[in-house]
Length: 340
Image (cartoon, rainbow, N blue to C red; front, side, top):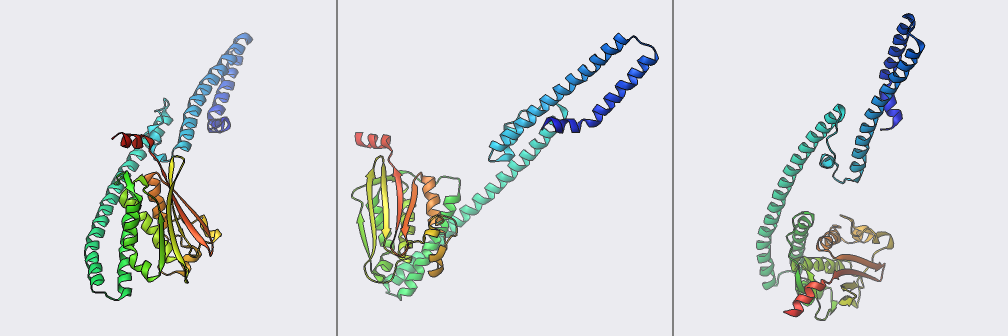
């Protein structure tokens, strides 16, 4: 609230004060009151109203300015009542009470919404687990019977999409259902390769792994899912021809462990590279390859953020794509492990 806004708002009050002053002054002149008294009355009259309006203006401007500043800083603006004090003027108190009611209603709605969303997410997670049981049985049956490879591949795709839904829900959920512990990279890589062995053999893709005996602090299942998504992308966007490779390596760098997954596939156009982690973004390659959802790398990015890892990507169209996961080393944890 500026001074000009305040003066405009009080215009009619100022007008009546001035009219009242001239009416009183006319009476004093009419009754032949001494000039000295008239001057003293005029000074006191205007000083009194000046003080009243100045006090009123300052307490209002400080309150509204405080509300504006705190509102600009707040992300959840409906929580403004938690930061603002109840003002000491009537208009402000009424304004504060209305804000309080709005805040209360909003919090109740958000609480109800979160409860419903959590119930829905729990139901979907349960549904996915229930669906995966017969799907796993079907996968085992088709594998033992040496059924048509196309059918096996489609079952594998369905399983992959179910995994995506499951981890998408977990990535969006505010509850932390992961467990951070030391994870052997070799073990995770073996699991991922086992999941993709049929398609790797079919497409004759060579896997080169060089991670030594490195272990990282992360959640085992989440890392397995993330690596599976990255490897699946490498397989999906692999070029036709000979010498198809996916190289996985890990190494120490300062107080970090760097995991790199490099393929010599299609590569990503430069114009798409900055958007590959956006939800549902498929890009130019996605339009060439059927079944692209644009969700895989988005979910991987969200999971990395939750786990405190850094996800990077490098690529050159027609040559290679390299996905990098950076794990910070917990030195305190490492020292405790060495003491045991």
